[in-house]
Length: 259
Length: 262
Image (cartoon, rainbow over all chains, first blue to last red; front, side, top):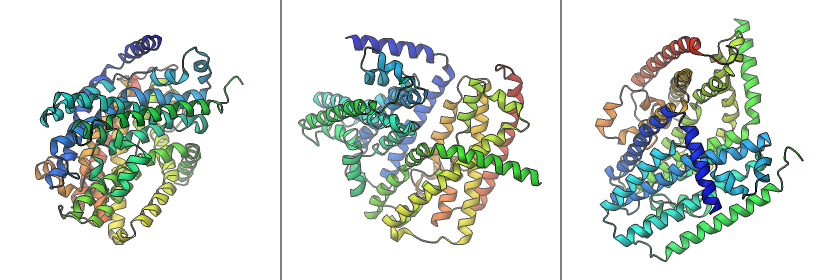
């Protein structure tokens, strides 16, 4: 409860601060629309040439694209602005102040900022998902599975992003790692079946993009049984626990400004 | 003329040394540019089923060239300007008897010095994984492609510079540059060779800079058909356009600048 209240306060403050930058917000709307159109165009190019991305109908492929855009919008709105601060705070030594606070430092580092420019992207991605899901004629149960699958995907994406960002305790100037992840999610905008085998393996076992976009779509479309939802959450939970353990481990190496 | 050379060399070496500090960042930044290889994999799968006009080997060559062309023409000067105007650091630059444009340009050139060896490593890995895709496109094509990528860098740089100067009036101009960036992602041939784009789209973008920023050098290097005369002309014209625009904005913006001490 306390954490929910904190979250609310954090986001209210950062929204208020970002309202200073109104033109940026308006531009972001334009950008979100343009980007979604471009991504749909990218999928269209494959279908226009007759390639079905490894056995997906056009609307089904759009569902995968929508999920990738959803995760992308969380990167823009939440993950990027927060996680890049880890490296800033290590550089300036201000991480001390966070560690002194009586809340989980991981929670603090992951939630303090909320970039309003992520909102347009979120809305566009939800629109895309809704359109694709309606076009494939998803049942009520399918919608529920989709929502749960997307939740697991977001948890996993967060955990992996945090895991990568934690390395800045050692390397300090590496906030580009978060952008690196961001573009890796980009590769998940097409179903993994579209790629050749080595790429597929990479996307499943090295950087688990498969579990973020393709797998939730497969569960919702009943290509995989509902039991796979458990697998999705198990993977997300494992990644979360790992990111927590890794953060604690990394903090042992943090030479603070005062010590 | 000697002093120009000396100044230029000093500036570029200073920024090269500075950028060496950031090698970790540059490495990850470069790795975030590997998406073309994923497109390569998907299009090669399509080619494997005999569905598209190009062969899998052509896609391998093309997307490697796309990767290179993107990496060589990367810019971030809009971000520098935004930052310097907002924080007032621009005041210090104005005190120096050299147009700030040269500092930013040297910053970019110095960074290329750090990025090039890393690109060479990616090239070696690619050659090891796809030995059958190796081919020498011919000296003429290599030279023309290099000219094209240099001009493309110019267009990117001056466009980014012009957008960055908007921060004299707006609080945050970087978001506006993202529009340009997004248009580049989709209309420059990064998704697929432009030959696969619908004719309507191709003629709509024919005189915009986008198809020449990546497709022109990549097609030249990978041996695809391309109207390079028109491409180079378009790039040249867009260079002039954005350069003039940037200079005008600079003159107007400097008067508008009201940081501490200015």
